[in-house]
Amino acid sequence: MKNFIKSLRLTLVFCIFFSVFYVLVLWFFAQLASPNKGNAEIAVVNGKVVGAANVGQMFTKDIYFWGRPSMAGNGYDATSSAGSNKGPANDEYLNEIKVRIDTFLIHHPYLSRKDIPAEMVTASASGLDPDITPQCAYIQIKRVAKARKMDENKITEIVNKSIEKPFLGLFGTEKINVLKLNIALDEANSTK
Image (cartoon, rainbow, N blue to C red; front, side, top):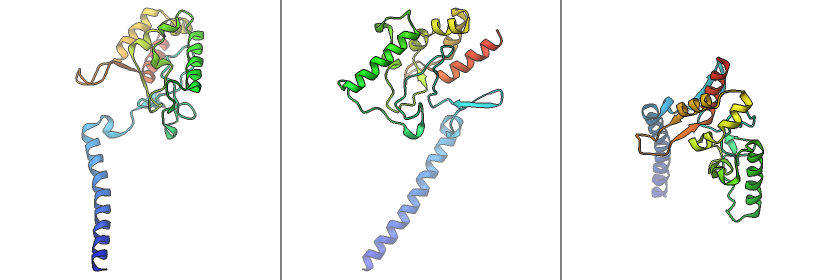
């Protein structure tokens, strides 16, 4: 019984110590090493919060660039973040992809099926990816320019300025944050 009480005390001390210590270490690291001190990067336009830049947003209008599809419940609901867990031979999954391709082609009649990047019709593992590759943005320029009645070259400039390079030039790939791109597009369109 004596050993049991010692074990119980030791377990409680370690649980409390490591619970608090671990959280404090993570918090301290976030304060020093991460952008925005570990907080979400909030996008604000004219004093109004329009979204978090590190979570995908639902853009469906032709005047905006679209992000990757989400498998999360209602659009990009972070509380139901997950992939579909459906394999590439699953009929239901293949039908979802076909519907996404068909919808994409309706809005981009100048493209053929083979021109659509896979990431525009497949969700990321989290279902919340806020970024697309430059290629995904470039294929949407014509649609956005037509919907906004803007010059394609002007929109291409905005897209090129929105490209984020790999971390330290080594880690990751070039990417474009869709929310930031659409905000830049709105700002450029309002000064037109």
